[in-house]
Image (tube, rainbow, N blue to C red):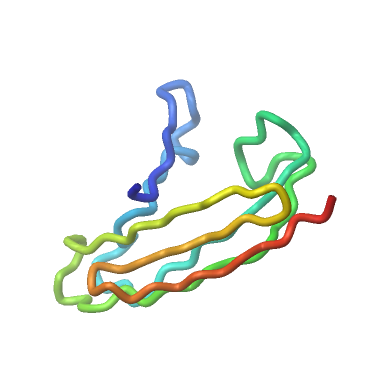
Length: 102
């Protein structure tokens, strides 16, 4: 799955951000922050109860391609951990696990 928020038309413009392509043409890396919340319907990182678990940084190679570059980002949810993986268009990946305190 490509990383992009499934925003709704009712979301404010500052929340309508797609993260699967560079934000600027000569961008050389991407940072993905992972958050958790005890709430069932948590949506935004700045909501009450959100806690940052960690982050992934991945190279965005070939800046001469401008916006024609993509990242593939996946999250797998287990009972005691979240596995995160991010891969760029050249096949380089970054993987990590975040343990959930129960």
